[in-house]
Length: 457
Ligand SMILES: Cc1cc2nc3c(=O)[nH]c(=O)nc-3n(C[C@H](O)[C@H](O)[C@H](O)COP(=O)(O)OP(=O)(O)OC[C@H]3O[C@@H](n4cnc5c(N)ncnc54)[C@H](O)[C@@H]3O)c2cc1C
Image (cartoon, rainbow, N blue to C red; front, side):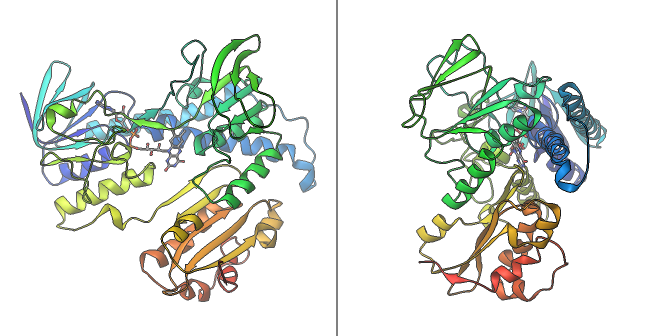
């Protein structure tokens, strides 16, 4: 039996920082990783996709060179080099994380699959580890839906897409949400024909309809085919590669492509962990149930990151680490419910989102003031020749606090942060409105937008 003060399972976005902080507080820490160090974000999520998005953006800009008064020859995408650039970035991140972890005082790294024997004992292969405190940071994996034919045809997921070093002639993407849209636009720009199939009546249906519609228009303008309300999906082999029956209300009843990417959500990596033996409860979808401090139903066992179902982003996983570490080591009383939702969709232009959607604000009964501005009104967007999209902000008419915002436009993923501090500080929107911004930036139009609020009926 190897005894520690703490065991951290998984090296995603919470585990490594937590291990370091615990070890710095003189605790003896075991860290267990079964796959690539760094988890989803580093290996097949944020880092590689945003690296590929950057290559796709460069290809698009090169094709638009004439719009800027430049002449370039025909644009050729060398997918092997695009992939090599991505691999180099991923490789550097994962290797440096592993060597950093291995070099930390008080930290012992185990490579292998962890499984609970009881709430304070974990098996890794033949080794038994025990600790008073255990931190679960096991993340998730792509959901493969049980569609008819799915076992009979080859399909790609965000993980296997990382190995693609060619341009698929026709990529059919099942799932019109964040992951599907990023891959769809990127591969269209690399030269694939792309069809996106979505079961809901609109893309990214968690967003407001005006956001969904604007994103659809942006993608359609790049000749990405979009099939909505696809019901009764089924896959079968076809001469081209794969045929997907979509049974849509409008349009052809099936789509044939050379490759299919399944981008229909994620499942937590909790099924093989032995949670029942440890008395750790999960919900019906397998997410570990946690309280406001991320404590599970077993004493001194915490769940952080995607596996607790309280966030699905790198920054939420990292914030989980901060909450747990500050509460345990600094006597803080931080809660996960203090976190304001914030995230990006990294299409081009990107969507930056913070707080409530219009639908959520209405549901919660707020009297709403709304400000809206097309990106064509933003000088910086015009100067850059990137005027697609719009921004909108929602304000509580009573308290004057900002309820939420969406900025779909060039720099929207950065500009949306101008609102965050005022939201955390519960400041009235007038504080943001009266603050002077740099010209010419996208953010400088936020005060203007806040000066033109109207009641949302
Ligand atoms: C295509 C894609 C793009 C994304 N882009 C973004 C983005 O731009 N921005 C953003 O904020 N988020 C993005 N995300 C989400 C982000 O990647 C995740 O929210 C984040 O990685 C979650 O981190 P985590 O720490 O919860 O788990 P993970 O990063 O998934 O790490 C979990 C780790 O635990 C290990 N593990 C699992 N089970 C065991 C076990 N039994 N024993 C030992 N080890 C185990 C795994 O091998 C893995 O290394 C993206 C996700 C995808 C799929």
